[in-house]
Amino acid sequence: MTTNRQAHLTALASAALACAALAAGPARAGEVEVLHWWTSGGEAKAAAELKGTMQKMGHTWKDFAVAGGGGDSAMTVLKSRVVSGNAPAAAQIKGPSIQEWAREGVLANMDATAKTEKWDELLPKAIADGLKYKGHYVAAPVNVHRVNWLWANPEAFKKAGAKVPTTWDEFFTAAEALKKAGVIPVAHGGQNWQDFTTFESVALGVGGTDFYRKALVQLDTGELKGATMQKVLETFRKVKSYTDKNSPGRDWNLATAMVIKGEAGMQLMGDWAKGEFVAAGKVPGKDFVCVAAPGTAKAFTYNIDSFALFQLKDAAKQKAQQDLAATLMSPSFQEVFNLNKGSIPVRLGMKLDKFDDCAKTSAADFVATAKGNGLVPSIAHGMAVPSSVEGAIKDVVSQYWNDDKVTVAQAMDRLVGAAKGK
Ligand code: BGC
Image (cartoon, rainbow, N blue to C red; front, side):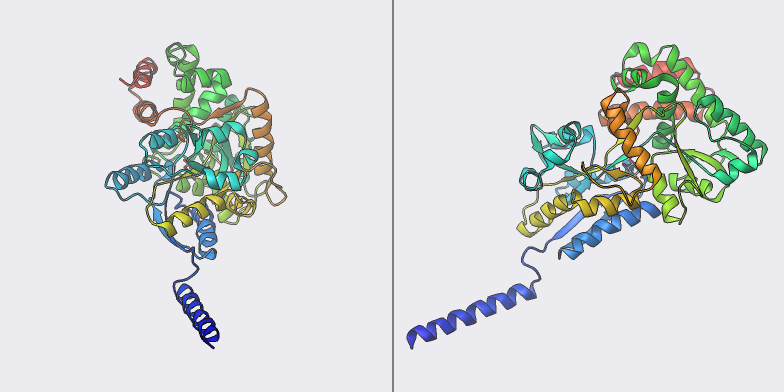
């Protein structure tokens, strides 16, 4: 009898515990606050996939979106939140900044998730190394964006009787024809990071990958003020003469919208621009065309989005964080996210059947350039140099772009100064 009663009480107790757990939601559910700057049409669709996946796992998504292409504003806001001891669970942090944040001792260790999910086997080694600090994973990647693209509106080109360019000479011939046809040749948004996105494609196309690396990654003084840089700066200024007077301050996605509508003929921008075309229902090869930026077909400027996790005390929040990290690298998420984002999966061995030709070209070129000499990091998108140097050289380039009185010689001297931290 006693035994029966005890058994009954035990059963009751476990039923009560189970009810309590149900009322509180799945045992592992936690809140995950994620800082990102994906607010344009295509970006928001991609971010919504992440939110939906986390919610399906029972977690609560707390959106911490800070508008501003390229993420400069997001990084400023992140710094103040972390300094005030109120870090989000995860933040879009990439390139050398991952190491900068890790050195501060605020990032969480992701080794356990990375081991269970086999990241070392699923990521190219060079990429995995950039996500580790002292041998431990502190960031999880989502994609590979290619920066050196040119987007064109075929209708506008038809109207102008122009050919989509593959060299800088062809670019200026096409720009002239578009102008004569009453189309704005180059859609541009005047913000530092957009100026530099164009600048690095000009540098790569005019100078080639060795020059690009020496001048802009290794910050070699001789290259920063040599004859090739002079040609790059002259070409860059010529590109500006084909932009419209309303470009200062314009957001990148509004510049893309000008190409979508045919108000402008082309835009030099990374493939997050494709996310805008796709979100607007446009079809690659028909409504828009993607080609490598002039002179850069054999090169690939990479920009890898990744998330770092911040150290948190709450166990449920920690669990949600680790689930987020595992989700980012999962095959189904890599597919649906990148279809919306315009990028390609960073996870090796993914099938690309659902991806369009721009993505397939990107994937093939990524592999080919990685085998050769053509794979280079984007400076404009935080992949190459410490953030302080990046900010300084971006300022120099934008001052030169915005003020025709700044001479090529002055710009080169300032670049050398910025590279040295002066
Ligand atoms: C990010 C992209 C983003 C773009 C425009 C880049 O730096 O890597 O994910 O779409 O900025 O905001």
